[in-house]
Length: 109
Image (cartoon, rainbow, N blue to C red; front, side):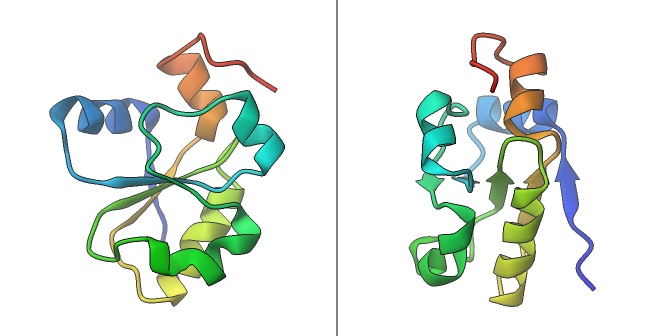
């Protein structure tokens, strides 16, 4: 059983400010992606495409999965874990929490 690591938005912000090496993967749908994005997202892969596009990701990099609220990113985390990825984090509260706590200029939907 996978026990996902829930990453708080403040912790992700601190990691980014420190310049920590990681990849952020946004798994929302294209219309959501067009509305707003979290800072330096390194990969945009809609949830349904994660299994077929996992080869675009570096399995040796810490990977933070992001969606609107944190539910779909948990599914993506499980998929990547099943494919052998190990250093995985789910952004707790997703884009909504990022907007509330880090960047209120992000448009909510």
